[in-house]
Image (cartoon, rainbow, N blue to C red; front, side):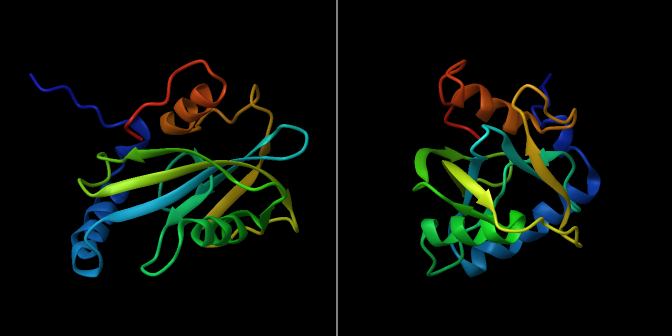
Length: 163
């Protein structure tokens, strides 16, 4: 019997359809997909998380790297778009993960940075909620990948190769 390794937060039908559709189109646009994501902490040590309209759970901010865009520019863009965040220290590259749950071609470049929020992030069609949370007081529906990354950052687990 084959065990289903899909995390509970990825099992929603809408997310599966959107992901499959997007990754059916991506090979025609670019051969490999790459994204950026960051563990963004404020000066009080709280982590910034976002909740999207199209995928369940709380996530660290991030998104795709566009053709012709550097990962650094993509990271700055995603932090600005998803949280009105700007890094106050240079982002620290932590790891590059293979995201085989999304696609056989997807990688996530993962950073850690200290940020400030330039203005509250209003809710819209993409980001339905966001905020800073103490690491010991996270929302109950934080994704399993986010929880794994936080354990890795805390030194409680080695960095995995898979997102």
